[in-house]
Image 1 (cartoon, rainbow, N blue to C red):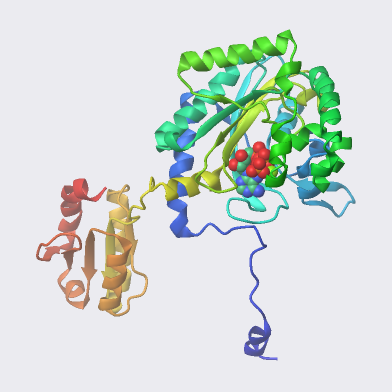
Image 2 (image 1 turned 120 degrees about the vertical axis):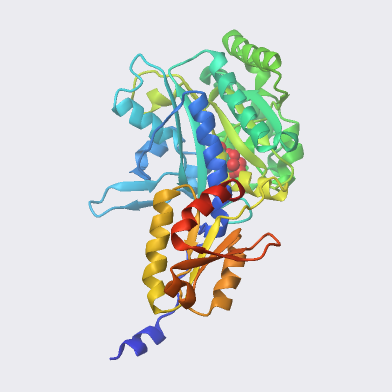
Length: 435
Ligand code: ATP
Ligand code: MG
């Protein structure tokens, strides 16, 4: 069978639903955001950690919680060839804590860490909600006192200022207290919701028996008035929890960060205690939480480790990028300074070597060599589209004369022709206009 007939019968394979390609044109805004985040982490002396994308399923069952949306219905879980149950990570905190416990990084020492990468959840894909999405996370492990909760919040607040997003985000704060307090509160909550059973959707009726606090996190609009009438956890907090919460609020006041206490803010994961928070926008429709976090002092023990207090936040990068774009806060800038065109047999080799010489002498200059050697008019169109300010032309004439023609693409100036060995000096002089 000829190759052609095989090719003709093959249908085009597409990406998995809810898993996005990030195309070259979109990359600059991702790099912009990531570079700002990295600089911020450097400034606060947080260190990067990288953990595997696959973990034992038990890690997430124990940390995120068996009766959470994530573990119940969103995880990509499968048996590998050895029959072990593995899961694609749905979030990063569990892996980060596992790694720190495994390598003794939290034994009598503090770790300030960050990481960025894809997370996987089998949710219904929609704007701002994907099956593979990127999270940026910062965590501080080993400090129990509230100033570290506030340090992390200040970090996020500084990020929004830097990005120009402060005015479109609201900061919501709550305290989940300690486990025994939540246990008491659960009983009150169950009594309340049981008395309004007919108003609960199917999920919430099930949660009533398994994890009633999670009812408060329901996104179902029809449930909101029932949730709004529910008793609040803050009435059940003991002295220690109240003091922690009070200190967080006092420090936020002192640092000038505005907050709204949302007494019904719970998080979709089981490991939180004390402080929980979210940064929310109304600009992105239903998927309005761009950053969420909190304290998780019992996580390390849930994973079988020693007691290690922790606090952190995660942000959804797709949502922040959507916000930057919708607010007009990121303008795409050209990726090319100088575009090299060539035509004629000998010019192929000359253009390639000339480009190398330019890269050697001017390593910062962004040079694109047209790879086609085709019609100059076509090459000029591409040069113009690239955003370059200068076009360098190596045609047959130039090749014979050892010259190069320079065309100013963004200025109303006549083109010039120079000896090739003068080109670098010329570009050096121009560099202030180029980069
Ligand atoms: P949501 O309430 O939107 O479902 P969540 O409580 O499940 O969010 P977290 O697990 O706290 O979210 O994740 C932190 C952040 O990651 C969220 O605030 C959001 O910005 C982002 N995020 C979570 N799930 C998705 C997703 N499926 N697609 C894109 N971003 C997501
Ligand atoms: Mg969710």
